[in-house]
Structure formats: C-alpha cells, structure tokens
Length: 338
Image 1 (cartoon, rainbow, N blue to C red):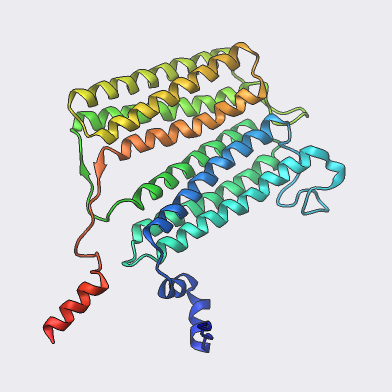
Image 2: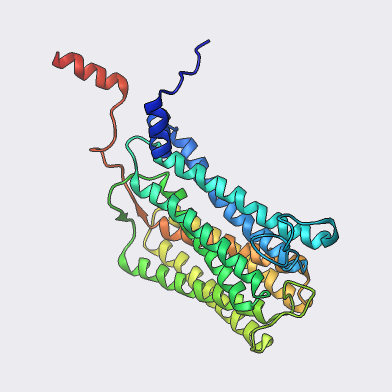
C-alpha cells in the first residue's frame, strides 16, 4: 500500500498562500466530475428556492427574529421557538450546503488542465452572489420581511441560477469563440422571449409581495398595489411568453434548425403549460400553500429551461491549441525527436 507523502514546510506554506493552486497541482478531475460539481451547485440553487418558499408559505419568515444569530442570545433555534424556528434556521443552514456545492465546483474548475479561467470565474461569481444573497436575507429579517427586500432576495437567487446554468453548460463546451447555429432573427426572438420572461418573474414577485402569503403570522407590510390587477397582468405576461415560445418553436422548424434547440424549446413550452395550469388553479382556489410553492419552484425550472434554449443556439468548439495531447501521443512524439 502506498503511503500518503508528508507535506514539506514549503508545501504547507504554498497551500496556505494559495490552496486552490495547491490542490490543482495534485489533482486533475475527470470531465464528468467537473460536470457533476457544476450540476450540484445548480441543483442546490433550485433547492434554496424551494426551501425559501417553504419558509414563506409556513409563516416562518421570522422564525428566527434576528440575524446573523437566530435570537439575541442563541445562534441556533431554541425549543421555545417551535416549528417556525426550526424551518427558518434549517433554511439558513442550507446556505452552507449551497456554499459547499459552489466551493466544490470552484475547486473542480480550477483543477482542470489546462486551467479554464472563464469556468473558474463563473464559479466565483456564484460564490459572491451567494454571499450577497445571504446578507440580503439577513436584511429581510431585520426589516421585518419588507416585501421589496423579499422580491430582491428572489431576483438575486434567479441571478444565481443564471450563472449556475452558464457554468453547467460551459463544462460541456470548449473555450473557443461561440459560433451561432441559427440566424440573427431567431436569436433576437429569443432575446425578446428572455426580456418578457424577466418581466414575468419580476411581476410575479409583486404578486407575492401584495398577496396574502406575507411570510409570517405577525403583521407584515405588503406592497400597496391591487393584488387582483397585478395577478391579471402576470397572467397576460405569461400568455405572451407562451406565445413567443410557440413562435420560436415554429420558426426553428421552418428554418430547419438543429434538433437540440427544438428539443429544448419543446421542453420550455411544456414547463410553461404546466406552470400556467398551476397558476390558474391556485388563483381560483384561493392560493393554497402547496400550489403556491409548486408555482415558485416552476418559476425556477422555467428560467433554467429558457436559458438552456438560449445556450443551445450556439456552440463553443474546443480550442485545439490548448488541449493537451494524450500521454501516449506525447511519448511517441518525444521518441521520434530523440
């Protein structure tokens, strides 16, 4: 059995100065490992959306009434705080799991040979968004679940999902310049679809901020808009997004686009139909918590599906000047030159 070599003082000093470079010198992950690490970060970002919705819909938003501690005297939830304290504190603890997943993605990206700096930057971007959202989450608690801060909290999580999807996609691509697979008109249509979807999600946060699920059983400020009117605007925007998606699918068929954009557009269309069905059912059944939670989760899945459509419209080939040759090929070349 081969023993683990001991670290020299120089190695220990280097590890302390730059631990990522130290790990990268001693470990090269497989492409599958890097993809799994990026996917884990994305999955945890979606999980945070789900658990954040559970906090709001169970009225546990002030289960821990202060931040960064759970109470003035305790870092964790106490028995006296009941189930609300457990739910809110559990959601806070999941932030550490998310940080671990993002950290794994950063380490895996940094250890790839040759080093894909763009991929590593996407990992660090996730880390800083998570840190910023953690602070914003603390502010949400400190200001008593102000609906504007809650909306910003959700939108920043959507930004995290965006970067996580980009990183996951890049783990399956090269570092060459992107090459479009469809014409300019199709790409512009997708950007219109993305803009409409951003507006749809933003108005959705207003519906939540004005609606009955304030996030706590105590008196919580609501947005001073008519909830019925904003809900109808949200529905109109949803139909616009559905129509644009169907138009995109039709155009892709007409221009004989590659199968991947068509498949992803179909997936987006199906998610939108399911999301719309849930939205109408929850509206006419007085917003049961389980359906509102599914609608929040569906919003994250819809956004991921839309980003995957946009990313399927181009390809990034491998830069052959940066791809290392296999060991056998290098050895053969060395032998030929000797």
